[in-house]
Amino acid sequence: MTKERRAVFFTGSSVVWGAELSLLTLAANSDVRVHLVTSNPPLANAWRASVGPSVEVVKARSGRLSRMLGFVGSAARAAWNRETVIVFDFYLLPLFALLRPIFTLRGGRIVVDVHDAVRTNPRRRPYFFLMRVCDLAICISEYIADQVDAVEKAVIYRPVESAQAGVEPPGTGIVGIVGQISPDKGTEFAVRAAAAAGVSHVVLRGLATEANQPYLEEVLRTAEHELGAKFTFEGRVPREQTMSAIDVLALTNADEPFGRVAAEAQLAGVVVVGPNEGGIAEIVQDGITGYAYPSGDLAAFAQALTRAANAPQSVRDRARAFANHAFDPVLQSRSYMRSALGI
Image (cartoon, rainbow, N blue to C red):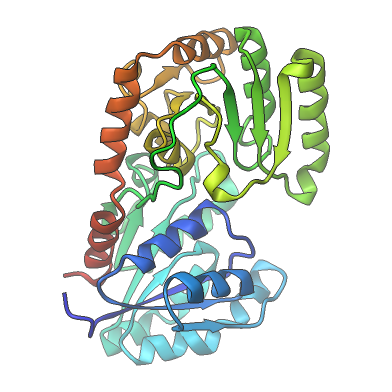
């Protein structure tokens, strides 16, 4: 594909979590020119390291209304220059709704990347409503696409690169709980299920936001009471270590938009246990590419963890084959860009 076409990503996200890692993978594997406009200096630095120098850093502002002010000039230029804009942070959508007439007049294109759910967060409804000003919504899963109305949609799974290719799990039944530590992610529920399953050891890897520090303390108290010496908290670890030395990944969020960490586990040969709802249900087929349980059912979750600890090699092999196909970095990135550019 020619490099003459350009896609401009806009994001006001202040963190570098799974969505931002996906953004970097999309851009690094693109076969069109890409540019980033962001208020996040660490993300800009990561972009320069993995994608290239085409990045603009705008002033970070607090508050959702104020954060848009820093993007006005760049967004207006993109509209006037007939760019294809990918709004990777839907909290910026009010700005692009105001600029919609210019995009229409000049022949530009507005695409929104939808990687958050609205069903359990009604405060996001106004932003989901504004998606109708876009030319396309690229949804991270069928689960998310079902929540988006009044706009053309495309479902494209994230490209995921294996950080631990060739490293086999230890085979000792160790359960990992990996990712952001929060009530939404159900971290404590996973700890209690692992304790009920009588697993050999549980490793918790991740961080909690400042607001969720009391919840982290609650999780650690539960782990101390339920698991004692069979529990280790490692905090946030380097990406290449997220799946190291564990056999089973325990997931609990039934409202998960996609489940990047599940894809990473499958690529690493780690057996995934997750709820039979949300985006995770599109990745984990019970007994085929992992093990599923009815969301919120502690006993069923514990039973699924026991099954996963004794999973045959065929489950790991099928999961890895599925992930290699469904989340291929080059194929998914280029499919994404073609959809975004409308070609």
